[in-house]
Amino acid sequence: MTKDLDRKAPSKKTVSRRRFIAGAAGVLAMPHLASAQSAVDALINTPGRGNWDDQFDAFTSRAPASVSSNQPILGPNAPANLMQAIAQYQQIVTSGGWPEVHPNVPLQFGVYDPSVQQLRQRLIVSGDLPRSAGISDSYDSYVQGAVRRFQARHGLSETGYIDEYTLKALNVGARVRLAQLETNLSRVEDLGSDLGERYVLVNIPAAYCEAVEQNTVALRNVAIVGRPSRPTPILNSKIFEIIFNPPWTVPRSIIQKDIMPLMRKDPNYLVDNKIRLYDNKGNEVDPMTVDWNAEKAPNLTFRQDPGPNSAMASTKINFHNKHAVYMHDTPSQSLFNDIVRFESSGCVRIENVRDLDVWLLKNTPGWDRQHIEETIHSGISTPVNLADPVPNHFVYITAWSAKDGVVQFRDDIYNLDGAPELALQTTSGIE
Image (cartoon, rainbow, N blue to C red):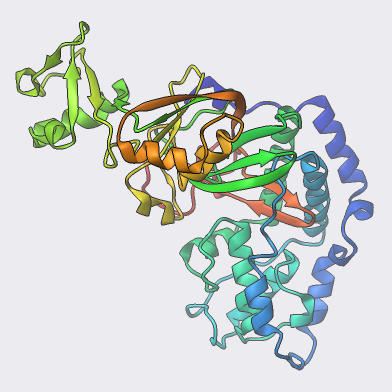
């Protein structure tokens, strides 16, 4: 783990703000969250479940959309939004929190089971299900929509039914979520709000990239970040160069950990993947002359030829940093469909990276979309310097509120939040 990933102690400013919040939770909390538990108890005792109308489907379709926002997670209102969320969650904790959900049957649309009452109560307390939906045994369209909203807030597949990962997220206690919000308020305050008029932000736990201009998200791209054993570092830099059709110089860590074992199993691996070996004088070396059973990798440069099937495919985005990481394209586009996108060796792969290329180069004369596509199609490795370098920030934020009243959480993939319940929930064996 790099030193950059060490968790910082809360500043005095943060602590004082938290004390203020703790003392004023009843004032700052949203009115509809006051006395949450007693209100839910009253709903449980309400006979019947009322008259449902044809707004079910509308609610279901609107639920995930109500979570999205074009506001950046580190916009100027980020600290205030987080403090409001902390006040809300303090009120929830004071009122008794929310119940755990222990299903008797698979919970999905159309199911009628007493365990749905627990689910309804849980979703009402966290604000995902309207109180007017009431408490009953029916998993109806309101519950389905509320589950989709909950899943959207936690970075889960928006299926509308309770799978293993949704159940784990539901059963993280309110007190743990409150502590997570407080931890991330400290991080947000330490980062500050002056990130640049135009900047790129990668939120590592969320595994996505934001291109921000004048405090509005111009692009939001799905990303693949470093696995826990090879984490993506926290950093601040500036993007100064894009290379189209880049050759890939393989990092030493990948040569040692990945290529050496692969060559022992398949001596044709390097040739099949168009990876060439060079000595320190630039002379090409025949892979068959290397002892692949040696303990240490040979002191050679491993370089993959440019092409659509290379590790970086069409694009490499460079910024100065001591970790030798960068952002890039990938030939394995299907990986972006996974919920668990912690698969890289520290660099960040960007979905639809050409959209980001266009945005980064919009102030660089001669590099419009058409020219970019023509250059990539040529197959020739072409470096382009940005006329205006763009600030680039890799951050570690597991809880935030970019939209008033909507709180988002992500798994603590690198175990920096200090609570085992927040560790990587969406897989059991990722390394």
